Image (cartoon, rainbow, N blue to C red; front, side, top):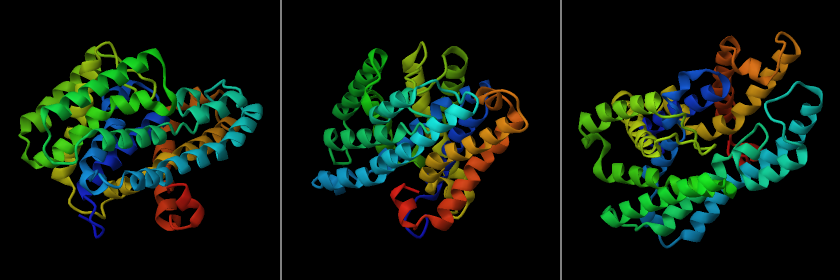
Length: 333
């Protein structure tokens, strides 16, 4: 653990997951299908692992306010900051991967769904805000995880899936409901002790689920509500994949100063800043060396790999050296 009491291996798991996110946004191809069930679900699982329900049970409003400051204010500030930039660049540069008119994009910012947002699609922040607050209100604070909690999580997940199939709700409310089972999984892992799980449950079964998901099911994408033809398999693969990555990091990472752990501690900065890095480099390439559009660069791995690497390193550097600046602190960096 670090000096501040953080869990090094859990930070490392989040760090590897955010690296997967950046890579998926930067490098085209089918390579990411195997990793797609891990990328976003693990952040919900990690939240359940660390969320102290007993601490916040009688302080729900304080929790609500803290998450507004940590998640919603950065979301709206960053989206509204980028909206005019995105609108102007769309007039002078090649197609940037979206045909949303500026006014519709502004409305999409209020709605908080990735398909209605400009390229800085920070849909996860309002969705995560809802998911944590729903969990705090609906699940008991005691450490005993009974059948009632399990059934509640499964019901909410099924409800979220059904709602998402019909309509993409504002702020990803349907995704927040779908993710309740992931949060409960994290809480169960904390109570059970991840290190107490046998290799069958923490390694071999998750590997099997991920392999089955990638071979027989469609692409998993929570933001787009894509769970494939077998949503139960996608759900199980997301839980299994999260457990697998956490267990591997638990076995390998014991130093809070390791770079994977630092990436996890600065995952918010990486998440909100990497699109800016990607856009700046992509625009520069389109204006100089590459004839095409955003999709051309995305599917050119020689460009995608450096974009992904810089999309991690630059936010880490900014967060490490300037995170205490008032403006960056309000942006969650």
